[in-house]
Amino acid sequence: MSEDTSTERAPTLCVACEARHRGICGALDPEQLLELSRSAHRLVAEEGSEIVGDAERVDHYANILSGVVKLTKSLSDGRQQVVGLRFPPDFLGRPYRKESTINAEAATTVSLCTFPRTTIERLLREQPDLERRLFVQALEELDEARDWLVTLGRKTAAEKIASFLLLIARNIDPDAQVEMRQAVFDLPLFRADIADFLGLTIETVSRQLTRLRKEGLIDIENHRHVTIDSLAKLEMRSGS
Image (cartoon, rainbow, N blue to C red):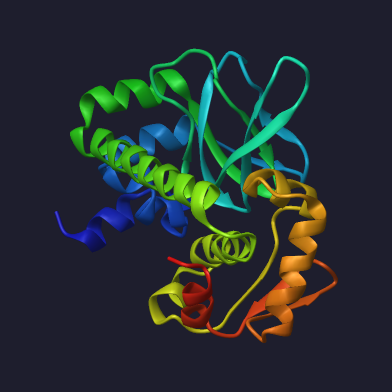
């Protein structure tokens, strides 16, 4: 079956969806995609709202269609650690586990396509390509976690901030990363969360952002709107 025919037979809601081609849904044939779409629901989570709670029973998984999701772990005394960020078209969820082990919160306004856990887990058994895509995503997340350990353990404060900005730019504007050109975006985290994510103080985050601005590597407007003149130059500054 040709690609064009598959696209024509896909549900109307799915044809223009980024997750349809770049996310896990791209592994499904038209019949499976149609079946999944019948149980799927679009959901908008406002900035700061909880999507999944830690130790919460999970009945649904989701594709991130737009926005940024913040992943956190909480300690018994209420302290919280930002442990990751997720971007479109990432799959949000942990197959084969009935309870979540992490808290997922909308760092920005987030659009999600949600579907029942039982449906996804059945399709995983039926469709090896779908299982492979989730396996690849899990390996990529493992690689990212290892790289982030190096960032947290060995890099200077300035290198940490540069690495964080590169992480955002690469995921929000992948084309800019390929061409190593200018990137423009709004920070998905407030400075307190950036500090938590990087193991720094809020004051250090502010000082290092100012330092990068004075070096001409970035420009910041209204505390969150960032322009990176050259991703190549910022990458050199990140120590990568």
